[in-house]
Length: 102
Image (cartoon, rainbow, N blue to C red):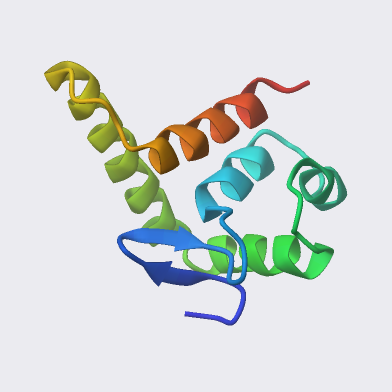
């Protein structure tokens, strides 16, 4: 791990925040600039964003597999009708907003 991303409780996140790596990666993949990503998330600095993007680029295969597994977990919860946790819903909603933003 780097100082810019931590892995705890099965989730990659930005230290000192409740922001998941997922949210930053999805925004980055959609073409958002680091500056606009920073503006979209209270508590992030440009150093957080650039650090998270660097972590993603250095570990792209691993992070892509992680994101695919998280997506599958979400789909399984929907199939079972099991409501996801409030934290997971918030992270996914944030990622969805990022992926649909112009």
